[in-house]
Amino acid sequence: MFVLELTYTTAELERIDEALPAHVAWLNGHYAAGTFLTSGRKVPRDGGVILAAGEDRAAIEALVATDPFVRLGLTEYRVTEFLATVTAPALEAYRQQLPAS
Image (tube, rainbow, N blue to C red; front, side):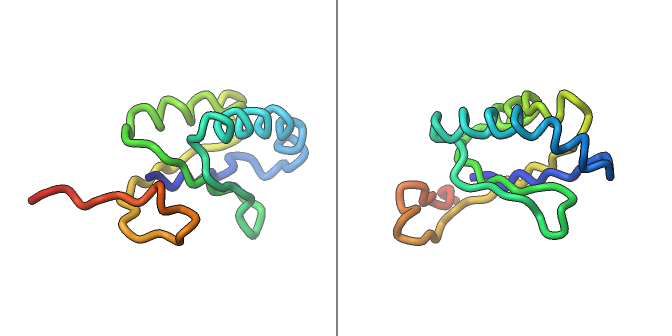
């Protein structure tokens, strides 16, 4: 499981808003593929957060590089991998096991 934290590289929200439809279309494609579980703006509005399912960090990093916000130089990503060993019932399908020692 991955937490994807976006931080805007520009304070010009007009530029973000112009690129937002392309970013939302990109998000929707990854929701349809089952990779993204939830996402939204940070408060204050200086970026966003995405919760993503995946086993391969390199694949997730390659995926975020395709975000229109990244391609336009509007955001940077911080990718944090974690093991979702405890979940709400609705996310039970995403529960992970600790690796054997």
